[in-house]
Length: 415
Ligand SMILES: [Zn+2]
Image (cartoon, rainbow, N blue to C red):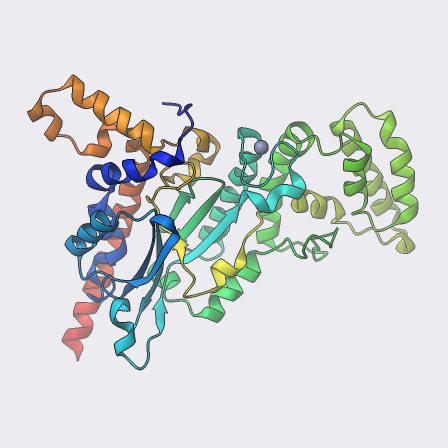
């Protein structure tokens, strides 16, 4: 059901008790973060941090079990929940130990629409719409494929951040155990866009494309025309096409193309002209012109390849907003979604607290007490699709947990 009404952030404090009392999926959430209780300390040694009303930020919270976590969330009603690392000791008692250090955490990725401002014309800053969200769709597809095919990870939880981005939690046991330096290596491997605002050319490829880049390029290329040439119309004005031409490292070619651009009728025709000229130069093989065979691919990737916030990925003790908490501004739940259906995911249809409350009361009004209590509360709402994705992720993870439990038992027998 589309969620058309805007959420009034003033209502957050009133609606959070309803959400935490009736909808937050404590059981599944605990099942996820305890990883089958292998080892038993995994959940109690995990750091959570809460942002309470008036931006009071409380770090190093930890809970001994499901019941304690549920009780504390209901009592404190956090405006935001962040998940940190699993430490060598209970985070809430960290002051009582001499060595307190992070041991494990999911490998996480954070992609934020604000990092796409230089390639989108439709919105800026925290704003998003269906047009620029397509950048996220491409990011999900490229990253999801790379993590599965290049690293062999299987337990990926993709989550909408509630406003303008997505997070990916890689939950495989071997990903959770990665050291800080291995995380950095993975992040650097996946980082193709380099250089800040002052660097115009941000992608530089080897002459022989790495298979991972080749695969990313195929995905990027499928979306380039629709997103860049049609939706964003990034060759639509002299100022805009100037930015694309700036990526060509030869002044003569740049200037010649700049003179041709006004004769083209639209972005698509301008891109075809640019592409044809680059290819012509490549075929000519004039070494003075320095036109690399991969220049077209570099331009396409610069526009649509995921813009990763790699600091989040690199840090073992970096906190990240939890799935299923509520974005305080939009009131939207940070729901998970199926990466294979990323094209269909519409962030503007993600339910906010006001809508969820309405859906529960509409359901309850239709049925009697016995019928009402027979149904899990979230199933009365549009959270149910996202919960189905979460449940199927948990079932697959459960199989991995069971294998590790058996291995642990065997180890105990051996020693
Ligand atoms: Zn937009």
